[in-house]
Amino acid sequence: SQKIEQNSEALNIQEGKTATLTCNYTNYSPAYLQWYRQDPGRGPVFLLLIRENEKEKRKERLKVTFDTTLKQSLFHITASQPADSATYLCALESGAAGGGADGLTFGKGTHLIIQP
Amino acid sequence: GAVVSQHPSWVICKSGTSVKIECRSLDFQATTMFWYRQFPKQSLMLMATSNEGSKATYEQGVEKDKFLINHASLTLSTLTVTSAHPEDSSFYICSANAAGLHGYTFGSGTRLTVV
Image 1 (cartoon, rainbow over the protein chains, first blue to last red):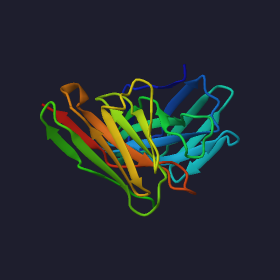
Image 2: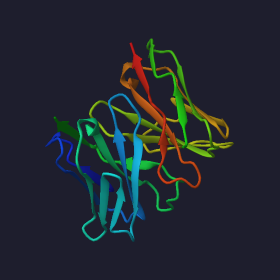
Image 3: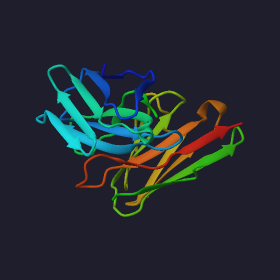
Image 4: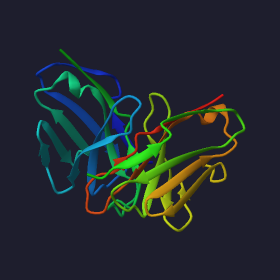
């Protein structure tokens, strides 16, 4: 069956350091992979999407890599700040069609804590 | 940017009653919307896909007669939890994908507590 695995244990990082989160998947051949941020009691907020033919994608202090051979994506936050503390979710579209026609399958998320 | 409005943000109901949750796309039209459920410390689980003008499609294990979905317009989908029981208590979240935008936009979620 299709699985998305994230280390759901809390990740504590000192302010100013780079936080790196991992997403591994099995039994998928995704055209692209997405990362979301979720704060307690709120819906997820879209951060980045990376396509299978892209090795790396950046947005401000965020960087995502995508290795379809390893079936893994890494999510980096550089110069981390306490305001970056949240749960970060990795997601793949459920169907093969892609393009927004299918819902998402999420990993459990990694709870990131940036300590001042 | 695309905005999805969901309400109520929280609701408490008695066991056996029904609760309706609304999801609106405010600045775009959504032929398809999605409903998720999230239990504490768990991931979001897709419940169903809401299709404008046609029947919703439900994920395996989700009772269509219990979770009624209506998508009567291009900007509104509703989820009705019928004959709610305490085990239905959860965080329900809707989302939509605005054409031309990458990523999905989510509502702020509805915390349902059945007592």
